[in-house]
Length: 470
Image 1: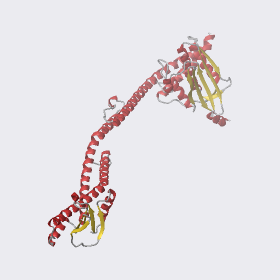
Image 2: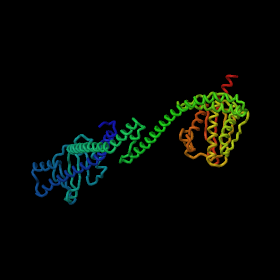
Image 3: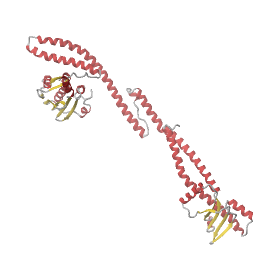
Image 4: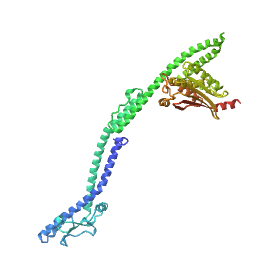
């Protein structure tokens, strides 16, 4: 049994508290023992005096001395019929140091007298007064030494402490065994489950099955089970995402090669004799170029990173118009969504044009699809402006708003989609791209009247660049 264990400390504390309790019991016990000792001396002295009174004659000195020796007193005084009579007597070795009247002493006084007897090592002569047995008089008075009384009290106290020590040790051992069986064994079971689970957290077979009878341990096992289930589920989801990322990266690699070939053929359409083809050719080339860039960034996303933005100055109104034009073409079949732009025609910002196109395209496409899902007409509006420290872009819609679950996991991949069949990657990628600019993407509102997102891009980097080039 070691003191650095719970059971060892529990047993040590038990022994300490038992001994402490016995010490509080010891003083009253010693006081009671002293009282019994003195009353027994009074009774023996009364019996010795009755032997003399029964004869009505004086006893021989040697017989009187024997009676006093058997009673362990020096003299005996009886008061009967208001007459005080010295019945037995012998020489007293010294002056009387104290008088104790057992008829009047209370509990506290008795305890105080007991402590005084224990701490006084010198042998004194004391007078003890008490009531005779069977009402054989008014009182009986004896004189005696304190040394035998003190020694008897010490012997009794040592025996009591010995019994207390044995009792405390036995109690501690029993409590130690009980703690081992009822507390430590279930705790070791929990620790063993934790170790097994830590070795293979993705294995659901290592999740603990609560079975403790103690309420506190059962609560701990329930909490551990809930945590293990959450961790295992998260690990499995991350594993699936990693596998999906590898698959997407492989598909994007092959798709990039296909689009590169298509881009070469699209470049030749600019030489077509058909004027409509020549007008459509630049848009087709731009679309294929963005698709190639998207494949390349998807490869980077599969490596858990987005490429750093390539900053340049461009007209935000033109960029937003391109995004709106592409969404208008996608919404022509339904014909229920109108697009509005409230961006100043001269507003110029400094950012990565392709990445910002992807961000706006994701936000507007989500807004369009949310409105189309209701089957009712709606509007998507984009606005922008600039302040002293940043540029801001807001994209709002008159759709049905986002459900609470979608708000909770809005920017987490594969969890924030509200559209059936959606992956939830659009907002995740958009938020990552905005963070790459040092900015933020947040949901300003979402209710029954629609949703509104806000993009903020700091101007600090742009101003530093202007100072360097100016």
